[in-house]
Image (cartoon, rainbow, N blue to C red):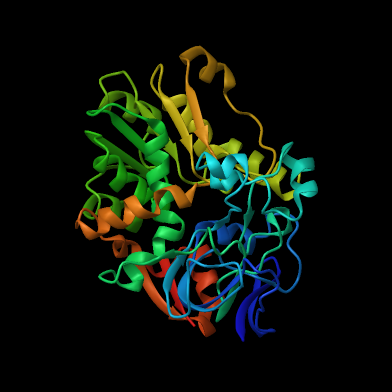
Length: 389
């Protein structure tokens, strides 16, 4: 089969690789109908996520058709159209029982590696380094899905593939960011980053009762989408004094919730940006937390800072005194996709949201390497690329 494979920083190519096979009775094989490139994948392309190995198959946002199931998978059959949540969950451990599937105890075969980095291991993830299990990803023609009696979810007949695809990651990631913030109706929410996760967070904030959402980015086309498609007020990172503007827009109180949807490669300015880039290049710091610093400083007293943006290791120069002094609450982590699939399908079916609004490019898998470069450079007003095998 054909698959997009990682060979190093800014080095991705389409390769012919072996077809996946059933190796465990709880496995299934999915023929991929659609996959997409996530902002997290760009971190892999940029070479800032450790433990990638040459030839690794990329992609954790994908859906398709069941073509084979293991003997112990009794809830799926050939021909079923499914979405596959990006975290891999066993369904049996403590964390799966409390619907915290991204913290599954059993799905990361390289748990020892993650324990050294994090203290405890999170769940395995498709196509996202050996730190998270070394699983082959879905930017391919076929995928082996472990724990298939728990992960793949059948898609309602009335939904198109494009409507369903983003329930695998970016839609529930934006939704969870608002859900865990647990804000009161009428709250003001600020969102850093108007990529797909940030745009979904804006939409979901309104769905969950926010009165105002203020979006911050440095790319004009993305701010335009946040305004026109999501109804957000917008601030340009390079042109507006963000902290002062947010204070003025909220009557001096600051936002009730600040969502950092950028992660470890945030855009900054001045000496602090130079500092972060130099330390990241020298591996003295694994992320550039400019947006996170700003979110902490901007958040109102007693507010909540939510971090759906991916961080992979160590960052520094965080204003923890500000967080402590203002009594902030932090919420963060990978998304527990399984718990949100059915509710989000209902939101789509009820015409409360059409997830396809984030799609800017539809590209065949064979052109996937060029699509990575386009997204990395933010060319052609790109926000979300959908790949067709």
